[in-house]
Image (cartoon, rainbow over all chains, first blue to last red):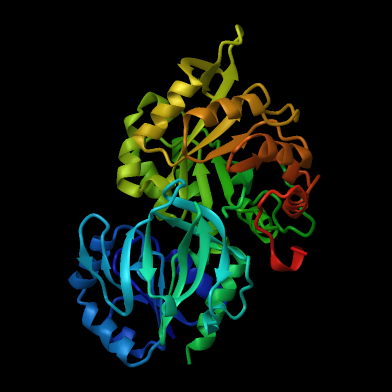
Length: 201
Length: 259
């Protein structure tokens, strides 16, 4: 079973359905016992960095996420859920993140329209099991104004926008994140979720 | 690089598609969700549901359609038609749609654009504008009520105001071209694109695949919306994308059909 963390950050229906369609046993919850039993954790999120962190605190989820991360349970952050995996965010006000990945989240500096919204093609920087079914040049769906600035060795894939490299996929050990929405990214997105499903033992 | 979007639009009344779409093997040819699923499989980049239900009481039917669509679709969904208040936005987004398109309500109450983008984010506020060239050729007027009523507003002034208020995208329909199948209104789109910097979706007049290639080659618009072309299966979305790719227009295609 995998758990989609319910911390009051937007609609989780499409993420849940995307996993259900893959035949995955998936629940939406913030219950500690449920989270502890889960073999995989999905951290979704739409909104702003400080509000997301505030909600994690409010629902007493930070310690348990730390515990599960240290236990080696696969964790997948999506969009804002990926951004809060980093150490610090600068949206609205400087805010501490979960710190599972090294780096910060800042407003995009690009010579193009912000938000970065629409289908953009992925450039692979290094191999990763999460991306095993995805090809260089496959398109995925982005909606964001802030981006993660990870370390080189934790960047898996990026896309090009406004002549800049935009962080698309990050990973370190059991912690993974996608800036785009796999649940809105057609077949390519399904393949990424399938790969995550296969990593969940 | 961002892909140019190909967007099929479905007119929905009381939960059913108005123009009959006749897909082979479709169980319920009137069901917008079934049709949208087909478009998703054909690699549509987004689907638009335009609700033309006359009565407010039937909104529950629309809600159910959106919820089912959100479960089935793996691409973004935009819903428009009859949206008047922030509560309407809330209902549509919480049912699972990704964007809400407003038209008359924005003109009657421009602050709705600002309130909606403040509360839900600019990315989900689409302002649909129906415009028509003035008889003296001096520019374009904005129309409401399905093109029946001239508001007297100038297209470029209104579009700029929408952007300033927080619209995330403009869906521009040419009343001169709508239903003619003579091709998109290139001049009007270019005039609009000179004054706004948010994404613009072209609508009205698409009669064939070449029209979509033309609009991407001659304007800088971000997407092209079509109804009949896809509904009557004169072309699949994949056909259009293959033709675009041939013309070096960046489009999203499935890996299997890319080479």
